[in-house]
Image: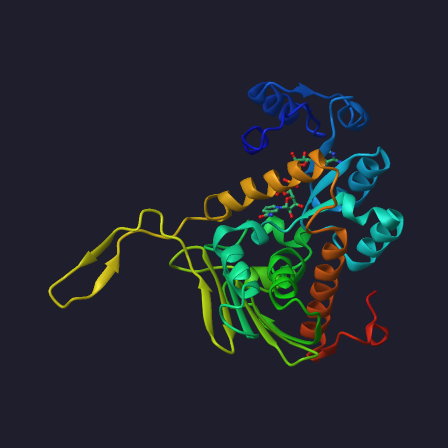
Length: 322
Ligand SMILES: NC(=O)c1ccc[n+]([C@@H]2O[C@H](COP(=O)([O-])OP(=O)(O)OC[C@H]3O[C@@H](n4cnc5c(N)ncnc54)[C@H](O)[C@@H]3O)[C@@H](O)[C@H]2O)c1
């Protein structure tokens, strides 16, 4: 639907699960390809959306770019930082041909805050607070294959810190633990985390993540600057509020339930931006290199949490990534 809305056409669909590809293809008038080469190699195909399981991203992305086409790769670029480095090395000067799907950069609220910071509406940005809480934890069988909270969930927020501050963090400290479901801990992950970061010019960022929020999907960005503050807030499903005799109001609906509803506009805007890049043969506004840097921060957060130490990000040699 988003591809059509962007003025493009879904030509082929490929999935290792043949029935899944056939279902999507028949629903949208596309061809269910029998192989990846057939899907990518179709003469009408100019851009390829890769929304497969994370461990397949690097191989598929390289095959698309090697075929001379542009890729929109779901986040994260790869399960580990080392695999991201390999991908960047293979891409060489073609990193801009990979549009990394950090969709939150295309959310009207978050993007609106970013635009206003760029216009100077809050002066110089000094502090950034990003809150990302899921309504409920994922199924337990997802935990061992997720790569962990920092690489799977926080990766969006780590990217947004770089995007909003327009400066690389130089110091990172992660804290976290299992407070929601001890089974997540037994499976080797955490369900709650906070990360603080500092840039060379002493701008500060805090990321707050939880795998559960009793009141719904909690997605907020607060940018504090020398001349004011901007907030991208949660979005209600309907906006209905009740007012009583004491003059208070109570929201009567929950926030948009989860990412497909909350970030629906961002996915549509992202696809539109991708189609524009393909049509105009332009490099992506958010590339594989952004995927590499976000993955670097996720790896640093994982290390910081596991070893209970702050990590100096300008001295990668100190960190044993293995
Ligand atoms: N941006 C976001 O908000 C957001 C939200 C959810 C998931 N994601 C990302 O999207 C990706 C997909 O997530 P998911 O939960 O649907 O994953 P998934 O593991 O359920 O896989 C999705 C599909 O990929 C197919 N697939 C697996 N390997 C393949 C291969 N080699 N070739 C072709 N098809 C293959 C599977 O059969 C399945 O139909 C993940 O990388 C995830 O991190 C992003």
